[in-house]
Length: 318
Figure 1 (cartoon, rainbow, N blue to C red):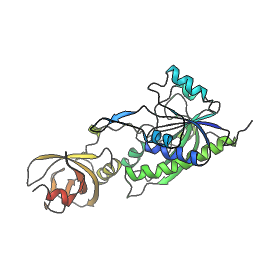
Figure 2: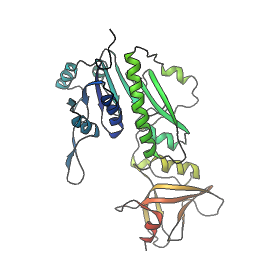
Figure 3: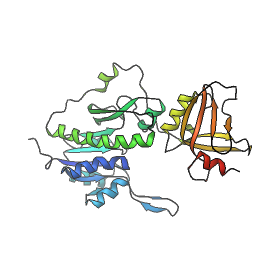
């Protein structure tokens, strides 16, 4: 028997801010969220104060039942989860689930992923889409299965990536688009109108499959052999976090500085300068020589300093 949205029992799993919008649209839309699973609290910051995940914060504010398992195969957690009698589980930015968890509800478990699957499977799809110079991206809902990010697709929604976008602005747009797509997906499931598409069908027309592995600081260095376009996309794709960086020598200090670059502009021109060298007036502008022009620095951060616009940074070097 088909259930209404007030009857369909939903367990929601997620942790960061990205997941909160999806949970919020369900709660505010009158869907029956019977439980929320999020990561355990962890100490953070200088005083090691215990910090709640954004999803936990929202769950507490809205009196939702909360589970915070250390291990997803823990027997007590599994008993508690089972007792919620979920018809459907929804996962947004959480951990990999064991089969015993994703296979529990009769209607299955679906995940929201911040890319147009099968492209950009992995932990950092928003960053990699910009780094690779994509002109559009989107979100996908799909049923969970054994291999990560490979399940049958329920819905996809697309948006353009604007030249002005960085990972931060695109994150926020996809967070909102993702929430509305989660709601649409639940409505499709309720009305028994889902026609899942096997990802192998979409792979047939794919020339190159691009992945989105987790990003580590050591992979965030700008390579001086890159062209301007590639370096600029790299800065955008890693801003505001974790931040692209370079080892730069400022002429008037002659000291090497590891500089994080959060915002830059492109300047295409021919020059004879060594690649990776810095041109600056020491007051208002600084730009890095690359093979087909310059990466013009706009917003930067030196070690143990705050993020600042380039003029303020240069004036502080004197």
